[in-house]
Image 1: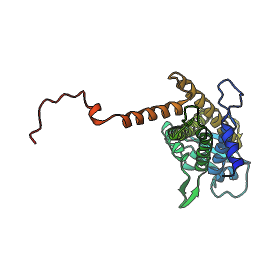
Image 2 (image 1 turned 30 degrees about the horizontal axis):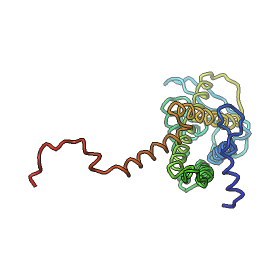
Image 3 (image 1 turned 60 degrees about the horizontal axis):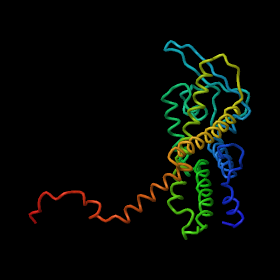
Image 4 (image 1 turned 90 degrees about the vertical axis):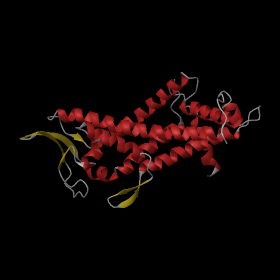
Length: 278
């Protein structure tokens, strides 16, 4: 990596002091922009086709009961992916937009799928392998984590030890991947819940499809912020800066214990009741 780019991300982990929790940093902003771009990449097909459309929930009373549909209008061009003008809320194409709104099981399945997709770099869709935006965001996140870590790793204190080691790197990357999955799942569930409430009000006015796109990205950023804030708050209760610092310390202490303890010492408290016949 060119030194200028490495330096940019190494120094990007410092808080910008925009709020008391010190969550927002230059790298944090880059991560949110990457997440937004990942969402646009993974959903580019329907976003492009429906960008000028509006949607409205339609409630129809059938003999079998009440069913709700999502109706699209305002765009007369030929659409290949979203070829219809009306879809049931359980339709797989609509679930990509609404996150499974309308049913708890659909929402759960969509949220779980979003968490898995957030870690995929490549995936098979419609019979071919495609590059996943979520995976690109993950690669960028790991790269920024490594840049921040390398800056601390390169510093050697008065005790002759490095400021951070490989336990810190593994913990930082692992925690960030978990957070990414949680944010993806919660975003999907939140969007689905909001649209479910709207679906129950069948006479609601039509809204632009772009509102779903902007709303989803906004929800993602807000959730990412509050999850990071909760992470720091919980870590402070155990005397750590954040969960990755706490996890790294635990892993380091465990490794140190295993390296300094012998089998005889660890099992010396067991009494021998009888001798083996061999």
